[in-house]
Length: 232
Image (cartoon, rainbow, N blue to C red; front, side, top):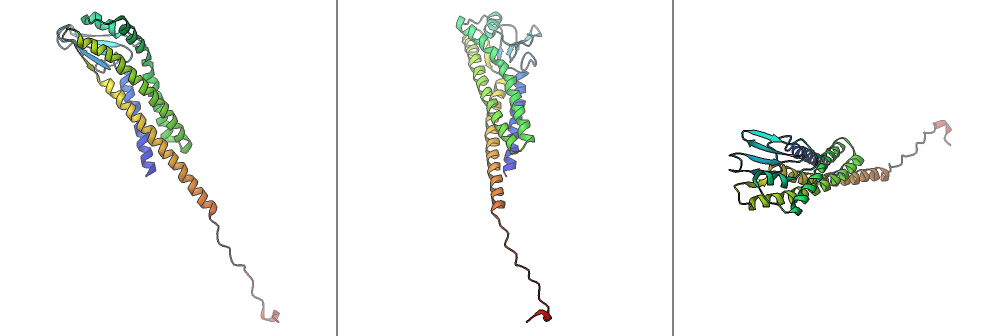
């Protein structure tokens, strides 16, 4: 039973890694995966949209073509939307969102930590599982921090775009939900692996103590029978 639960926890750590990979390959790597997507409406033609991702952004279907930045650490979503549809941002909001995009380097770090924790939990014993649970806890904390940063940062952009008097409409993209589910999987995987590790250690100690306490019954002393001629 505990081995089955341990496998479930291990699978959750793998799932967290895969979901974070999806977030990491968002725009500009994959145009259709975005943390925040903004449909431009009639601002730049029908079906045109801006996809903000982890390491850049894409302006899709603008005059029938896609235009993406190179993968980079840090960019300014406020400046992009001001240029595309004239959305106004305060100086504080623009500088804050630009600074927070530099924290997106934590996405691949959390992904790597989750995958290492998965490898430890899958191929190690009790000690390895304990190390896996501790590493998974660190991965969850980093994932939770970067998830909060993503939602806070893009909520500023989203509210400014939606409040702007244009036809543009901003909403969270699929990559925002994959990192949310990844954080949940990472947390559950950490708890399950840790609990099964502790239970496994307790069961092992119980088995050892049972073997130590067991004492085999004494054997009866063998005494050879004396010959009839030796009897008195």
